[in-house]
Length: 270
Image (cartoon, rainbow, N blue to C red; front, side, top):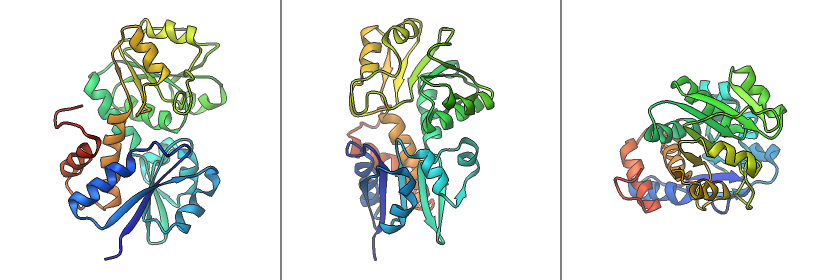
């Protein structure tokens, strides 16, 4: 049987653990497929590259989730609502778009706290989808971003949203770096003085970036705050994406077990 082809698109993408997770699950479950990486520099060419590579499906990481949204012919209800896609599959000649980031991140947050207030640093596609899902689950979400134009979506959806200049401060149960700051460099998601004033009142800090201790996490840890990186979100959203890729043929627990093995996680690790 000819293998189905899958990939992750992003820039950067060399660090991605998605191929490791998906290929392990394909192998353990006996599904004839392989999964690779593709460095996509121009998000506008996502659809063209997807089709040229002969892919059955793809995951999309920064900074192309909104490009993926526009590249799709069909969208599930949630992806349409939030305007961001991180999972694409080819069905009957059409690209179908989904968002698995938000339910993956919701699971991470639920493991940390049952409810409360959350501050997002950054206003990109992952922030959009996660903010809506967390709000629907009963969490109070506020957005802080460098520039005002990116905040328009959140204000329209009824969120409190601020730029660095007009942020009034406050205490939050969880502060989350939803930006790419620290992924390719040593930058912080906001000016250090502002970050310190936020973190000194925070109950915890999460960075959606994984695979490195970012400057944001190092600062939070130095201030004595409990932290978590983005590896759990990667795992949880990956399980959902795998279910979509394979049209629900496999049990989610089996998929997660295989992906946990790929990441070197013990059964009980969160």
